[in-house]
Length: 396
Ligand SMILES: Cc1ncc(COP(=O)(O)O)c(C=O)c1O
Image (cartoon, rainbow, N blue to C red; front, side, top):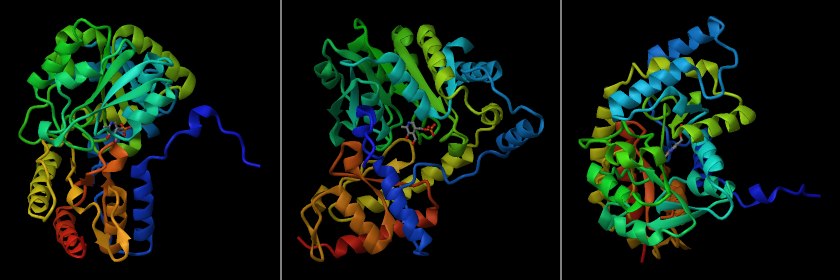
């Protein structure tokens, strides 16, 4: 007999990025020369100073419980970072450190939302957002953005999505999967729609360091009037290549920070003491060389994609993803099979040319695919060649 699962978890869809990852890893395990452009983590090492700080934490007995919201030392360092780099004034008491930004977001939705609340979610969106919102009892209100607006939410479409149940707006800049980065003016224009409303803004800025020739602006810096209704999310995974350390944080209005700390104290206790020590050292050891290398790969990948037949690709300003439109190829055939979705496109691309990409369906964008350039420059170049070969085999 199958066990009964709670209604809460019964409808969770497994992360599509994880399922393509599993297929990719299975092929790699068989020894196949897969080009993996489905990854969501930097292919660089954690800065040595951070790694050693982690080792020192282990060998010097810093291996015990910490305060639920993280050590005061780390929260002070994060407050200093937010002031210095983002122009935001937060007290250490307003910062809650968690086991990854994913966990910070989970704490946010659980602390902010009730059954019946709505969270405005611009699409394309990162796969975990809608599931986390639903788990909190709230409803994601997906607002489609278009390539014409650079995949950015506009003030008009934000205003049109507001209802008396709107609890929060969720922004992600730089964006996963599109790489879009909002300008200060764009953030300001969105903020102005919310000035006289009791609506919170959750701004996920985890890719903030990965911008190419543009300035990254924090939402609360662009709209200081909304500072006391903004939750700024960030973490160590992307900027410091520390995905496995599981360390992220949110800076929030004090009452919410207290609630999240309390929630966390009963759930996971505290983020790993070892990771917190590593994170403290990481804040002082950012490596701009990583950004320069991502920049170079982005340019090559976008140039290659733009030259492919039937593929449109915007030049994204940030993160390490490109999000080309492959709608021209939907309805085409490969052998006996019809490409009826971006998932089918990605499945066949993986099977036939051993290039792993993530279907846009997973991000609420069924006409696109996501390619990550968190892989070597040589792989990026080779992937373009294989994509070209794959498209040449497709029949109308
Ligand atoms: C937009 C976005 N937010 C948050 C996260 C979570 O990062 P972390 O490793 O800190 O949990 C990711 C990871 O892919 C992401 O893409």
